[in-house]
Length: 602
Image (tube, rainbow, N blue to C red):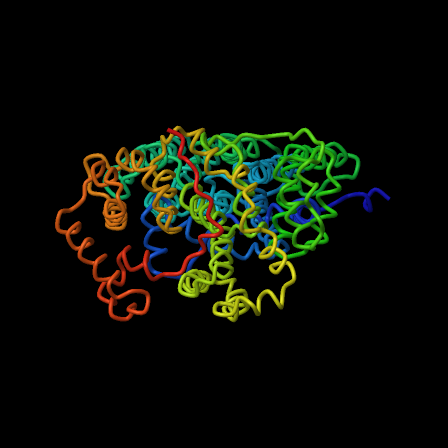
């Protein structure tokens, strides 16, 4: 009887590895599917040389590139759950097997804590995933930690040549994997403390020297980054303190784990009675990890609604939004969008008696920026939707979500050239080839899209020409007011949008802002040409406020006379002006009915 209740340590180790994978995979599938999809949606990977060059030009660029490549496949949350669980389980297995020849039940628990801490860090991006946090940073954390423990494992070999070679590889891999290079040496040093203090001190010294030394080269000579960003690349996210500090805690636990494990005794077998306490501790560690993950209902509801919107499951969106204990303005906006898509009467929805629960990200000028472009699109205001999507694409980082939104806006605005540009960019990803094929057939055929998809027909018919209520809901005025025009990119984007909409009246009104942005510099050619047009139409304030090239002004005056003489039918005769704002203003069709001008707050 006693023999039947005795377990071989190797069998117990393999069982614990399998159990950890199953538990992590189950948690990810049951409660983190939408989060994993969001990691894909808020990242970008393009299989093109310009994109690779830009990413590789940053600290830890190689790790970031690989992480982006893997994260794009999280478009399937099942793949994401498998990848995250497999990576964490691999870290657990290496910690378990590499730092003592024989096992111990306590060591199993100690080895499980660092990967569980990494899981907690990965699931604590919170609302910051919407705000300047590339979704691939999660995979960078997990993959970098795996590389670090693998390098530390290599350092455990008895052969000194291999040990020194491993140290050299870890040292110079800093430029590829950033902070995980010194991490690997510190883990290695921790495992050597009881064996040889001199080697441990050498490893720790080299690790710290590389951390402080190589990042100096990275920030000042190679990538010209802020020192603190280079120091912690690729994990450093200045305003995502929760994720960053959780990550540092997990990395510290990776360093401590070999030191603690080395103090555990060695056993070849273990009785069931002696297994009870470490077994309970193992389960308790998993439960604590699950409870420490970010579990805000509104956050996960928004992720769910965004995923359903991408999949165009409008009925499910309505059901999910209604089944919310504390609806926020973002949840409610997606609810109304789904109602519009379903063709339901939503006129009274804006008077819904609810006190919104808000949240605030650390980006000072965007406390609410999740749904603006989505809601503008749903109400048929495609120009405003494109404006917000482009604005947030620049300010909060490039990602698949807003790239797809801009492409759809271009289709609905009947801009085939612009649509093709967005489709060409999406086509250079690995996962959107079928999506591109589906939408390319609508590039020159908006009516076919409206016939194929009822929701887009509802979007297109919802916004009436004389309907001005949406302007009051617009984010642009709110952003301008909050930022007090302290962000020139926002103001410039607004001014260029006015030019796109041929709204020279609003452009002339906002010219003091342009003068402030381009003080001491020559403005873009299109802005100079627009200022000259205003002068020709009788408003000389713009040309007096900004720097306008004298030759350009003469050419604009000459061009306007020629264009007016040629008239609308003389478009082909005026090809020499193609590419200028003059040609665009007089001959290019644009969706001005969907543009709502508005004062920039002074």
